[in-house]
Image (cartoon, rainbow, N blue to C red; front, side, top):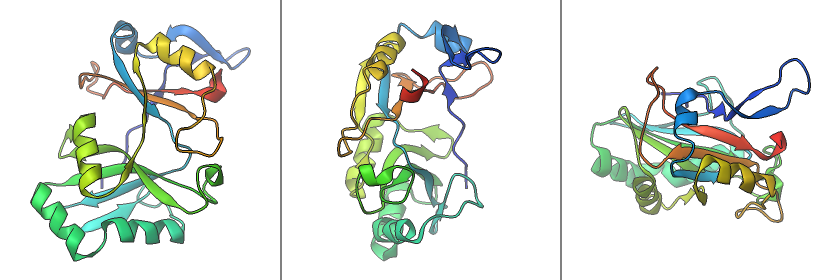
Length: 209
């Protein structure tokens, strides 16, 4: 099962003094080149990474790594969302024998500060990979509707600087109960990779400002 790739912090960090981010000093030159283009920014949910994988025959679950342990209430919730013959038929009709991985966040009570989102443990979708292709937002939303899943909200469509300024306002999470948003995950509106072949995607965390 494919592990989810690491998401780079937007700026470099002062490693000798304050340890704070150095605004304007980008970690990735491709991100800097694209900074004035339109990006889509979704909420960064404070939880634990969950993978739901269809291998063409059956569904399996994993955490950030294959050895990661998930809380039992979260596993039971995943079984209710993706388990059983009906869901297997949905996967088969949608994807056939093609492998697909749904990436999401397990969140809620007793997961990080999850009780500020909701008391029960739940799953919220943020990315889908079919074979080697990352799906666009509209396709992710369509699959969320098919499988009756929550999907991370879009917080902003705009430039990198607009996203930084937005995070500095310390916005509330739209899915929480008075909880501050942890930050944003941003991707260009077009699917792009850098010169190493890595997907262009960044995180902007509220605690860094």
